[in-house]
Image 1 (cartoon, rainbow, N blue to C red):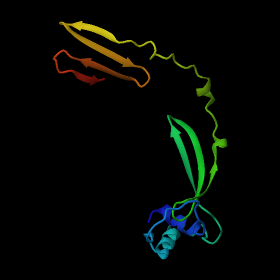
Image 2 (cartoon, rainbow, N blue to C red):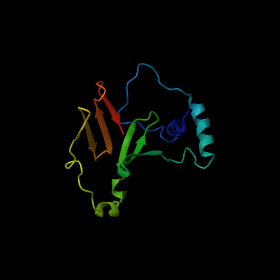
Image 3 (cartoon, rainbow, N blue to C red):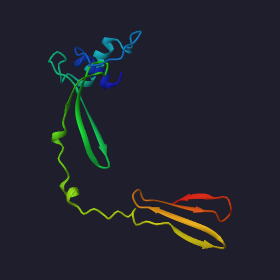
Image 4 (cartoon, one colour):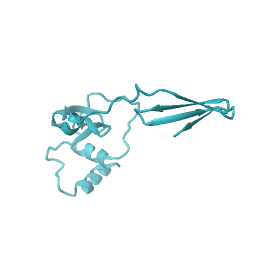
Length: 148
């Protein structure tokens, strides 16, 4: 079994999730004794399963080198959410990034460039936001788009 499955089965086995999926038959993959043996191997005697500890899972949303949202999720043995605690008040803003000068919006000033070559037209376009540039060429009559 996966380590989290074993830990949740032992430490959070007495909990019931807010919502759980209904099934027609039992979805248990492992017997209780297999999960208990695996739990004992994982914690190696450091924790007593009867001590009343519950296992939380930390979830987060991370985008473009910035931490946006952090929660502690209490799950039951079937991975169903029992409760959730927000940790967003512990997120400290990066003041250096907040006070840094922002570059000008180059996309507004970008314009298509037209070139005439042997009677054929070639148009190049640059997009500053995602650093993408494409060239559209119809010199050979096929019309290919080549990414740089």
